[in-house]
Amino acid sequence: MYKVTVPQQCGCFRRSGKDALSSFTSKDEALVHATQMARVMNDEFCDKHNFNVVEDKNDFVILMNAKR
Image (tube, rainbow, N blue to C red; front, side):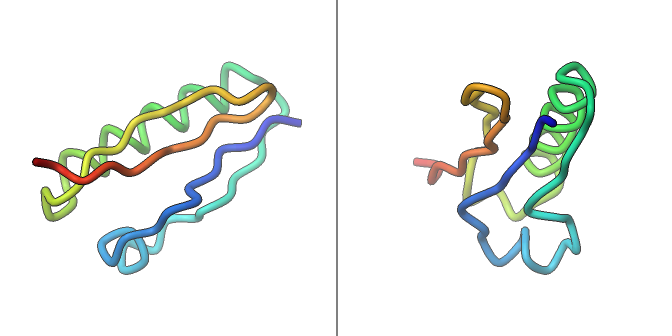
Protein backbone atom coordinates (compact mmCIF):
# COMPACT_ATOMS: atom_id res chain seq x y z
CA MET A 1 0.00 0.00 0.00
CA TYR A 2 1.30 3.44 -0.97
CA LYS A 3 -0.01 6.68 0.50
CA VAL A 4 -0.14 10.32 -0.54
CA THR A 5 -0.42 12.67 2.42
CA VAL A 6 -0.70 16.43 2.93
CA PRO A 7 0.41 17.04 6.54
CA GLN A 8 0.24 20.86 6.43
CA GLN A 9 -3.08 22.17 5.16
CA CYS A 10 -3.49 25.83 4.38
CA GLY A 11 -6.91 27.44 4.11
CA CYS A 12 -6.97 27.00 0.32
CA PHE A 13 -6.38 23.27 0.73
CA ARG A 14 -9.14 22.90 3.33
CA ARG A 15 -11.61 24.79 1.13
CA SER A 16 -10.66 22.76 -1.97
CA GLY A 17 -12.30 19.56 -0.72
CA LYS A 18 -9.20 17.54 -1.60
CA ASP A 19 -8.33 14.53 0.56
CA ALA A 20 -5.30 14.89 2.84
CA LEU A 21 -4.73 11.11 2.70
CA SER A 22 -5.08 8.84 -0.33
CA SER A 23 -4.04 5.19 -0.66
CA PHE A 24 -2.94 3.32 -3.78
CA THR A 25 -1.89 -0.24 -4.60
CA SER A 26 0.76 0.92 -7.09
CA LYS A 27 3.73 3.17 -6.35
CA ASP A 28 3.44 4.66 -9.83
CA GLU A 29 -0.23 5.53 -9.28
CA ALA A 30 0.62 7.22 -5.99
CA LEU A 31 3.44 9.23 -7.56
CA VAL A 32 1.29 10.37 -10.48
CA HIS A 33 -1.53 11.38 -8.11
CA ALA A 34 0.84 13.30 -5.80
CA THR A 35 2.55 15.08 -8.69
CA GLN A 36 -0.73 16.08 -10.33
CA MET A 37 -2.18 17.20 -7.01
CA ALA A 38 0.85 19.39 -6.21
CA ARG A 39 0.74 20.90 -9.71
CA VAL A 40 -2.95 21.79 -9.35
CA MET A 41 -2.34 23.26 -5.90
CA ASN A 42 0.55 25.39 -7.22
CA ASP A 43 -1.49 26.57 -10.21
CA GLU A 44 -4.90 27.17 -8.62
CA PHE A 45 -4.38 28.09 -4.97
CA CYS A 46 -3.89 31.67 -3.70
CA ASP A 47 -0.17 31.82 -4.51
CA LYS A 48 1.02 32.23 -0.91
CA HIS A 49 2.66 28.79 -0.82
CA ASN A 50 4.65 26.37 -2.95
CA PHE A 51 3.85 22.68 -2.84
CA ASN A 52 6.29 19.91 -3.68
CA VAL A 53 6.31 16.13 -3.51
CA VAL A 54 8.81 14.25 -1.36
CA GLU A 55 9.16 10.47 -1.30
CA ASP A 56 9.28 8.89 2.17
CA LYS A 57 9.77 5.11 1.89
CA ASN A 58 6.48 3.83 0.42
CA ASP A 59 4.69 7.15 0.78
CA PHE A 60 4.63 10.49 -1.01
CA VAL A 61 4.25 13.62 1.08
CA ILE A 62 3.12 16.94 -0.37
CA LEU A 63 4.97 19.62 1.57
CA MET A 64 3.99 23.28 1.81
CA ASN A 65 6.52 26.13 1.84
CA ALA A 66 5.80 29.84 2.08
CA LYS A 67 6.58 31.85 -1.05
CA ARG A 68 8.99 34.71 -0.59
